[in-house]
Length: 546
Image 1 (cartoon, rainbow, N blue to C red):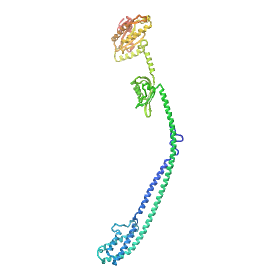
Image 2: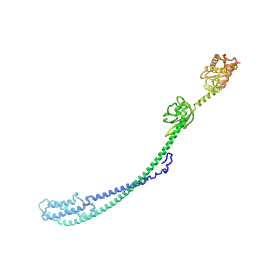
Image 3: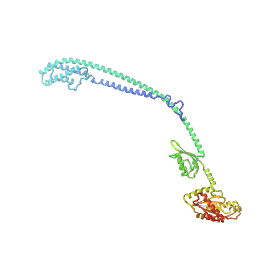
Image 4: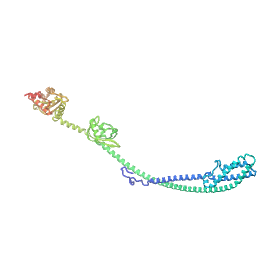
């Protein structure tokens, strides 16, 4: 027996019987012995009862009775024959007596017969009886026709004389047969009694063995009962000790679980443990419940449903199914008010079922700061447009797309005329106003698909996808007109008017990247400024001017 920790209880060796525990094999041997003795007793008893039944049958004295009956009937026939000869009895009476003697001798097969054992032991006596039967049959046959006649005829007297003459010797021989059969029957009975006595002795021995085995088995059962009672008491004591230890261990486990639950609920992390197939939630902390906008912990929850973005959800599921774990994956969780979180997950087994253990950290503030930093890194602080580096990166991608698909695109290079004069006359603050106003005016004219950026100072650039030089020139002219019509005032209340010059260049076969196209547009801008400013000039037209 082991304790909850897996260690054997003190004083009880592993795989060893409890102290006082009865050994069962001895009991089985005794039971087998008693069963064998019971079978032997039954067999011996059957054997003895069979012999007793044989001895108790009335035909056991048939031989002696048969010989005595024949002797007595023959004596009556002899006496009656003498009376017939002396004319004291009739022939009819003698014939009837002969019939009785014949029936006694079993001439018809209905009466008792001499047993086979007697014939084997006393063949002479059996032969005498057979001869007598033959002789009686002869007398009866001869006397039968004479019995119906009245009186004693000479034939009847002759038969009667023959009966008297032969009956005396026959009676002597029958008396000897009776004595012989009587002696033989006495010997047989004595032998049978001796056999019966021997069988009773065997039966007594077997019964004694059965009683002895029963006594041993009873003693063994009593001893085993006592030992079992002692073992039961010791087992009950060990069970109580084990219950105390289990209760103590259970209490410690519950305390540990309560402490772990407290730690996880007070942790800033999001934690959930849920089964894969059924979605049954084993644990979810208060932090994640609140982040999901739930009032109480859900009964079921499938981890992929936590992810807001379908693409991220698919990547998360594939990684978890393939590797059994996910580490620090940034994803939006929640449906109504998604929040950025750094998620980690493991595929584990809980209560025989596969489960997902997920924990995450809220990185919404980090992602917001990251977005701000990205915005600062790509946007010009004064105009709000893309800065030079961001414009070049995005315009390169847009330029490559148009070139790859055989679509036209054009570039506008825009510069504020006499911008230094504005700064010198009105101050840098008005210069900043001019830059912002110019950026706003350009943005109002361009499409959403167009790309606009500030390259530095008072210089701007715009990339117009799907636009030719002519359509780009039209857009540029609208931008120039919008700037010319803009009414601005200086801090002193004086009107502030300025113009812009724009150079236009269309993508051609020799433009391998965005930079040569920008250079061509910049050359067109330079020629526009050199030829009077406040104008739009295309690169093809610019290279044709002196």
